[in-house]
Image (cartoon, rainbow, N blue to C red; front, side, top):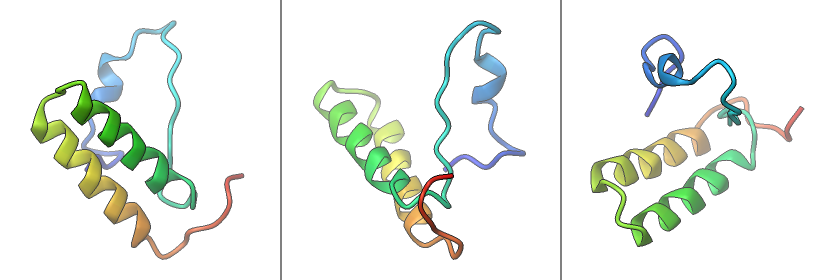
Length: 70
């Protein structure tokens, strides 16, 4: 699971590379992350990455301030 202050992924993003950020407060986010994990598993993405996505989705689901997207 990535946390803002520890995630090095954003450092890898090119200046002109489009990105889409999902936050735990978004009630849709865990479903989207799980769907990504399912598709990634089918495409044989690194199993550790897939597991991290499922763990992230679970953590998002447990976030106390969930609501509809802004």
